[in-house]
Structure formats: structure tokens, C-alpha cells
Length: 256
Image 1 (cartoon, rainbow, N blue to C red):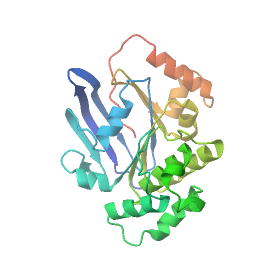
Image 2 (image 1 turned 90 degrees about the vertical axis):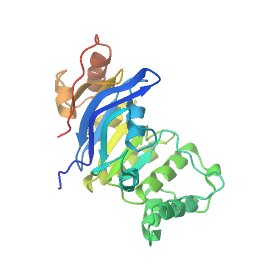
Image 3 (image 1 turned 90 degrees about the horizontal axis):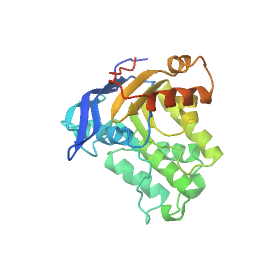
Image 4 (image 1 turned 180 degrees about the vertical axis):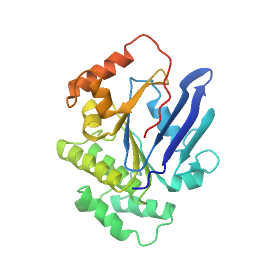
């Protein structure tokens, strides 16, 4: 598998009217890797994702998606990016299929129908093809957003709380879809408060607190810190030991 870095963040900081949301963050993610962003509310997780996908600008530093600077070459970066926010904004008066067709038009995709049908089947939405999204459950709306994000086969996929509103069957399906995308070569970042999600999916973990990287490592390395290798309680122990410890200087993280 090609090990070219698909996400490269260097000395990234973001300030809001004197408040520093993210401070001097550096990391990279390669194809096939799944990086979990872990941290308390206000740690800088969502800000990092929103800057990476070009919704808000960085205050300083550089952020590259598939080699394209998100500030200087936003169109090229977004062509390679799929982003699923924690509360996807869909069009209430459009059907599920119309959302996919709209997405295909936005990305100038020709002959998208076969892939769109496959995504509907994969997310168990085929029977809702012609349903207005206004009439869908929260979990189904989440699936529609993910299907739209996958349609153009992005090299980089960003998830912010991807399992919101999903039932157990939906959770299992989304987890498998994430694994499949990583195995196909996508570089993925997931932000969530669900520790079990990280243990089940992520190859690497970054713990953020007060906008700084407090710890980075593979899942295996982080769990070994507390003498375990396979329990969610061990990941909880790592998380609380880092986020509740006295303030410390930040680490620079490079996923490799």
C-alpha cells in the first residue's frame, strides 16, 4: 500500500478573539490508518476537523489533504475529502436519491448511479430511496450523510461523532464501512467520546486537552501504558490519566 501521507498538519493553531482553541498541533495520517481524536469537550477536536475540511481558516500553520493545502488550494483539497459532522445538515424537501444526485453534480461525477445504488444497499437505505429526508429517523439521516460523503470515493474521511442516533445494527454497519474504506486506502480521522469505538476501529490515538496534543501513539502502545492490551476500561484509564493530570507541555504527533 502506498504510504504517502494523506493528511499532514504542521504547527497548526486556531484562535478565536484571543482564545486559543488549538495550539501548535502537528500530525500526519497515512493511507489505511484510522486516527481517533480523544479529549474532553473544548479540547479542540471539532475545531481541528472543521479547519481540515475548510469550513473555518487556520490562524497559523499548514494543513494538507492529499498534498493540497486546504487554505491555498481548497477546491483540490475538498475533491479528495469526505466530511461527516456530528449533526449533518440535509435538505428536508429532497429525497435520499436526490441528495446523492446533488452530491454527484457538485463533484462533477459522471455515471454515479451504480455507486449510489451500492451505497444505498450497503447502508440499508434502498427502501428509502424516494423518501424525503424530513421523514427519516436521526440514524437514517446520518446514514444518508455518510453515503453522500463516500460517493466520490475520497482519499481522506473525517468523522465527528459518526454513531449519533444509530441503532446497534446501524453502528455495526458504519463500523464495517469505516474498516472497508481504510482497507481500500483511505486515511480516516474519527472524533468521538465513545471509547469503545476507538478500541474497535482505530490504529492510532491522539489525546487532546486544552487545544494541545497530550499523547499520541498506536492503540497497542497506549494500552500497554496501563498494563493491558484489549479492554475498554484500560483505554478509559489512559484517557483519565492524561486529561486529569496536571498541565504538561504538549507533544508533537506524527502518525507512522
